[in-house]
Image (tube, rainbow, N blue to C red; front, side, top):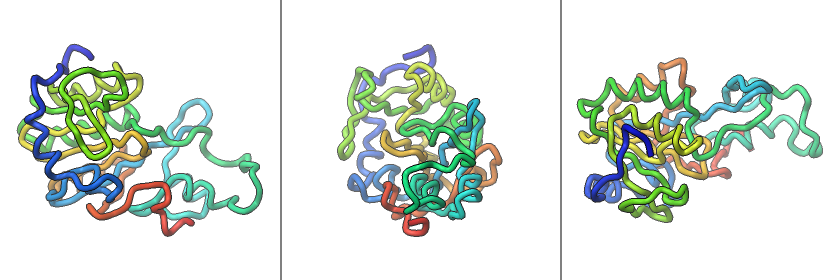
Length: 228
């Protein structure tokens, strides 16, 4: 899996995550453990022809939609031509929608820099990789999902993203449990919980398109009650 990360000897380090995550489909708290001071959602960028990143805010400006905590890219992007046939408007600002199940590498690197400032345990972090990607090792069992547990420094998050082509870790946290980050395999956003200071830094970082969320906010494709 790479030079920095290694498969964990057992899954004891993940017991608090298993205990803190709610039922599958229950919202943010079904992805990230309950109990953090604050939560945020990082929106995976779409891309234009040539690969340039396109933010959800740019899509919203084009479609007349609204970026909000429960926004869903499909509802946001379809708003402009919903009910007007299947032909996609030629002037849309994106070519490919957001990546599902993985945080794009530039955003992962930016997030990692922010996370590093909010833990004393950056040299010992824990990474969950969905077992469906072919990883092998001790399994962390969460509702409807099983993950291989790995350990290494925070920088290994980017190493995993490269080695799994292009999957980033599905869950990761530092040994001091200062925060936890989750990228569900079926979603185009990454969710995290941590201190209010961490979440404020994530929201303020111009490299990350992020919104504040509550642990009870729903996360699925039909959760957007604003852009319908």
